[in-house]
Amino acid sequence: MLVALLASLSVPAPPAPPGYSRAEIVSFKAEQISCADGPVATGGLVRPRTTVWTRYGSVSDAAPPPTYQFDFAIDGQGRARTIRRDATPPPAYYFDASDLAPSLAASHFPAGAPHDRCSIRYKASFDPIETAAISDLYELASRPEPAGNAPSLYERVRPAGSTCPREPGQYRRLNLPAFERMRPISGDPAWVFFAFDVDARGKPADVRVLGTSGDAELDAAGRHALLANRYVPGPGYRGCTYHFHLSDVTEHPAPDLPADAPGGLADQPGCMIDPKSISGLLNGSAYPTPFARRRIEGVAIVGYDTAPWGAVGNVKVLLSEPDEMFGAVARDAFMNAHVAEGATGQRGCVQRVKFKLPPAYSARRSLPVIARHPD
Image (cartoon, rainbow, N blue to C red; front, side):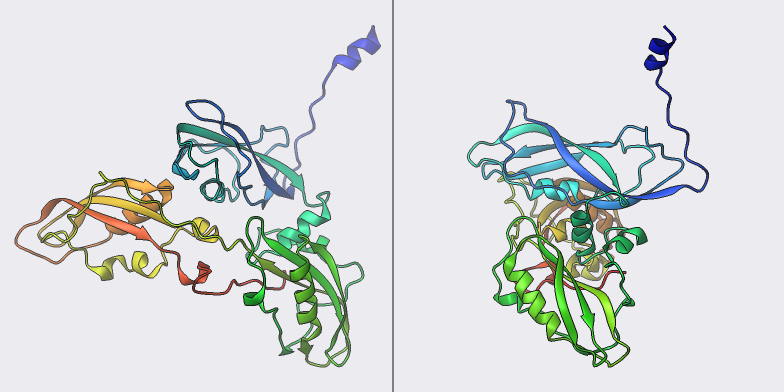
């Protein structure tokens, strides 16, 4: 009887001690995808990027994992449109979930079958850096941008017995693969994480692949480039690391505006915005970065009123595609804009804003930035 009673008891884990912290990989899994007229095929659903966060003692391991819900529509081309977020953020979790909406916008559903009132939910899961698969860590460390503030990640990908500092001395000659000649990447990124040694003359040797996405062309080109590097002569080092990363070059143009979309009033007297007051929209610096990474363009329509002294007010987003973030960026810019002073103001002004990819993200206008040393 006593044995049976003990077997039925469930003792919760003790709380984390003060000052406790643990770096974890955060992954997102899509679930519960449906539209008003039933389920949809999800073979073209793009997987969101993983990220890294630090769990502190105040966030219990027993807390339910957060979920993120989005409402959207699917147009006749099979692209997600009118993406809107659930306004309720998950409590106690603070990590980068900014790729969820862009990954949905980059997804492809079956064409020729538009759907309305669709929804999708993403559920987060956590994997401690200390026990995560080393291949996942190599992929995170290979990204052009840091995946999060997690020194333990870079400690785990550092080769055993490494004597190499952050960089094996000053470059005498730095080589990169001829990326412009390589096969364009479509879909998941291509990446490779190398280890290599440097002799006393500053010449690399014993270049070996520690982790790779499996793109043989990038692996071979990266190895050839590393062997051609030269560094300032020194004591020689073992276990240096370097990586290369190539992203999907597919560009997603802004959707066409519907025939009844408002517009045509921005050139009226009193409505013309001073370009200098919305320079961020015009030079691309205000472009929403999560969508730029996925090479997704957007469009917004903003309504506003103006005052005789040049102020702009009553700014409203009338349309935002494929995601509400484009409208939010345009609204914020117009709230700080101004027009030329005049005898009267104007009510009911309407401006269309088309977001074109900044040069740094456009495959048509620039090469990708693909290499850096891990911290």
